[in-house]
Each structure stands twice: as structure tokens, then as C-alpha cells.
Picture (cartoon, rainbow, N blue to C red):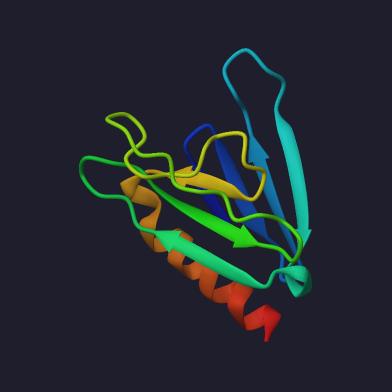
Length: 106
């Protein structure tokens, strides 16, 4: 299961969540999380004006705050390794991925 995000993607194979991010001028980075280690998930669907995001909460990791501004639209900052901004066309796939991760957690 894959979700194409803004400057990255998230995939879930039933046990591992892989977040791939590419910042401008940097090499792509990959973060792997085990679904059983995730204590919570957040999904903010994208709208016509602003990108949304999906975020995974881990024990001992601070929850990334939403950055508010004209360009960010209430998303966590790009360097946060446990979240990814998503475009509107990825809302349905992101909801399915979050539901699959929640099912694997429980």
C-alpha cells in the first residue's frame, strides 16, 4: 500500500511503515517504523487550497506541531521524520493506509 505525498511517499507492507522524503537540494531520506511501535496516527485531509498530512506518533517522540502560515496551511514541518504532507488526490489512499496501520496496531 503506497501513498504519494508532497516531496515523498509512504508505504506500508503490513508490518513496516516506510516514509521516504526528499528536500530541495538534499539526498532522499528514508525512515522505517514498525506498526506495532506506533501509539497513534493523525490524518488531516488536504483541501483545494492546502495540502494535508499524515503523521505517526511514537512513544518518547514529541508530537510535531503544525506550522501555521500562508504557505504551510497547518502542516507539520518538513524535517519531521514521522509525518508527510499529502496532496488532495492522495486523501483516499492516505485514509486507507492509516486504517491499515490502525488495524495492524490493534
